[in-house]
Length: 269
Image (tube, rainbow, N blue to C red; front, side, top):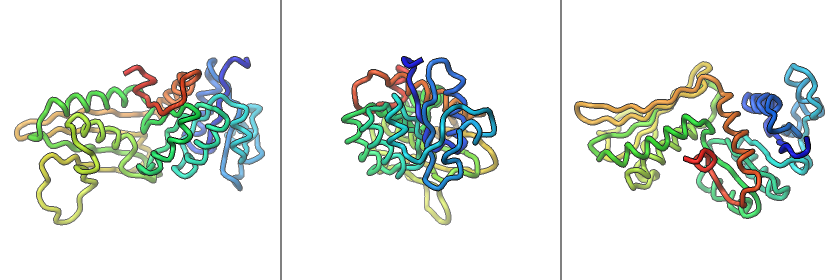
């Protein structure tokens, strides 16, 4: 069993954390060797399987990430930007592959991952699903093929617990559209509209966020011109797709050279 990569899940009590734990324990390609939660969390010291309401898994939840990472070959991290930066430094110290699904990271926080990437593999993506990453590539191609007569709007919907907007996936799609057009997204992004905003600016890329119920994730990229519209769409109905993608990334990263990668690399797109 020792040749099978050991994986640590951070944010173990969260919905994605629990889905990741289930995905790893159901896999014959990886083994769960650690579960990390923030200091003071009531899962600390419990077997993670028992804490999740199931059978013991032989892994005790800890608030010491370095101790957990030292036993692992990969860390899967869907937490918060500040925590992810801390985990990146510790994962690099332990030479673990660090798979980052955390969203809401600023440009400065993303840049701050670079020192860790000199020593370890980092795979970071706003969305880990195959379908979404195909949608990103399609968005880039369609944006490159159409001129600014086509307005671009990115519309995303998620559950009411999501704390960041636009979603990481929406920003991936916006970046793809901007890249296709050869422009800088920061200079053409319009994030939501309210009040008397004036007419839409030609060439801008709009973002709109919907939050409600238990929506797992829906993303539309709308290309609208006078007389016609093109809509590219992805609908996620089960967050297990993100967990499977993250596990695929953790396995893909084994033996790769230190550096920053994304799901396009993992999927060979």
